[in-house]
Length: 400
Image (cartoon, rainbow, N blue to C red; front, top):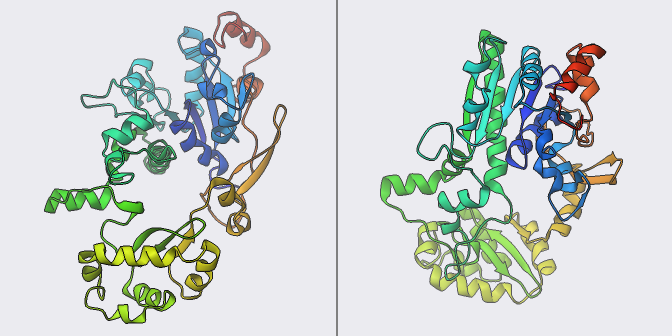
């Protein structure tokens, strides 16, 4: 059995952060029953451009492989009844909504514990279920600005800059998955479930890590650094070569000593201006222009072999195409394929979560309401008469 094959999760989720968290649980074997609101055409991620075809998009595929889909109108009494039946036979309810919405939708632990005392209710919201911003929607871009990330990203003379990826969303998904698994462990041990109040805001603030500790204790003020330089280690940054860019980092004194040999200036290892971490940091205005001039003399391909041979941390600054075709990417099986009735063979990146030796089994994302029969008849045991009555009452949407 796969690690989470005995886990069933009801996912009231949409778009990016929530589905990103649960897709890794699906890869590990959990049954993720994705509840899609038929009144709005299901998960909005199905319609994200530019690569869309009807109700299917490559964006949706990237976040929802391996899940099951059920169209369910939780705003109807009958739809709520189906949801409650699912709670009785599931381990967790997972959602990513605005902070005040889980209580309004009655999907918190206090709302559901009478149905299943061991149910774990994990809510990934923008700002959490308490605090003055709990009613605000949370979007990655907004949170990167609010949490201080953009203020310390980019070139010193440039504007505040967002990360090229939605790192608050993705990190929040991982935090939610960890919280949910911790809750499941406790619930199976104790027989009592709980709420997991996870937020993108908490995640973004938590990831400030050591710059926050430096500021809170010593008044350190983070600033944007030239060429993405490390705030305290010199040299550790991007350098421009003759035909591109590479990153070189001296995170230990031995790496600096080796680098002086590679660049043809072994005397710099003992130079009192550059001999120690503190010396190099204090004299970076002298050292970095010297290094930049040296690195511009050769191409990236000419620099990397001697740097690798000296075991100095380094690497090229790839574009996405180069990253996906890197030898190590392919050796680690990080590009996987699934078959889709609209898109044919879909290639995407694998989950980085590895448990044991068995390679995860990947299945395409579901079409909307594709698992109607599996859930209603198979999982819940409804007969044809009950399914027909629920359908007539609008539990599964007007088009069901």
